[in-house]
Length: 503
Image (tube, rainbow, N blue to C red; front, side):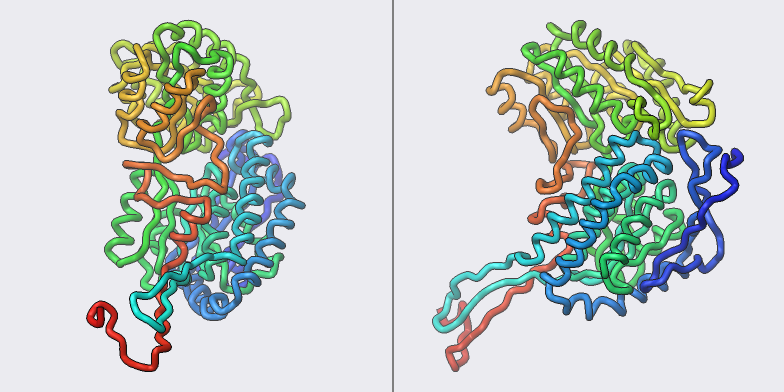
């Protein structure tokens, strides 16, 4: 392990029942800056099932009172939380860049997404709509209302360490649930900052609990604990299958958001400058470490050469370095394991018959990049649709350019992967845009934009291996995860009525 540049680093604790407490086993995990591993961001708990047990017990004890708190009162606390996040946006963005690596403009966007989700969800505190409907019988009223599901475990990834926790936490809270959240061990500080802000906003002890640590030691118990009613997970497809299996075996509600192999289609009438700009942002923003990253580009043969030239020009101009520097466009990847995986896929691409390594393909290890996990923006050209680099999620700054003859072939290629999260088309033809919009089997679709840029008031999620049908963001989707329907019948006839039997 590289030596820290600073002799001082903060030691963090779990948050259980309104108190910041040491992990039961006393073990800690180092959190280091991926742009410069000499910098120790902090020491964080390596929690075990004993810590999970304490956190779940606190959530169980807090649930009746939180459930009984009127939703508008819960909303007031979320509004206060939103104000705190807004006031500390810059500091939280800097903390996130130090532990995760992406550049400040992107971490600021991550915090802003948490702000947006908090205020948006708070507004639902005076809605949480059910509905009334006519009864089959006279002198009888029929209606339905929402009720909380109970105790929720939230397992979140490292690439959006404040935004994604907010997607889960805020709907869970407004619906009246209590929760235990486990952030990824690579980026716990941003979730700690979110939980500390919630504490300051007045959310009562036990309603929110955070346990930190690895998936095996802290995450797995949250998928099997007898008192947990709902598991909400965002992460890799492989881990998602394990989470789903555990939840199913214990009869839990399970919401999964997993991988993607997203595509941009560039038609022969596209604005090539705009399409190349969108591809650079979609493929290399966050160093390609987004589930919505634009990792494939299907380009009409008539504009293929021109597009590749323009994309290459823009990718070469990207400045790579520490995300805290204002003149940097792209930061590091998250850790050594990510470096190894990405470089292994680059080797796979180089060895696949027909594909050409057109740009990049190397780790940067000299000068300012010496102590970080930096990989060049990488472009493969003349990629065939069935190649592994065009089929499998790489989760790094690697993009495959695939030629096509027409829109029909572009759509066939684009739909030809196991994932279905996000897709995009660049065209000036409204007929082509609407045809692709209708035929692409993805949960998100863009016209003349990259595959990234979701907004909190629309559903987020995908089809096929991307998830299990649930959506995050937007009230119609997220509230349906974190609340259950209760049908209510009020008979004021003064006699026994037997519904269908009396009819």
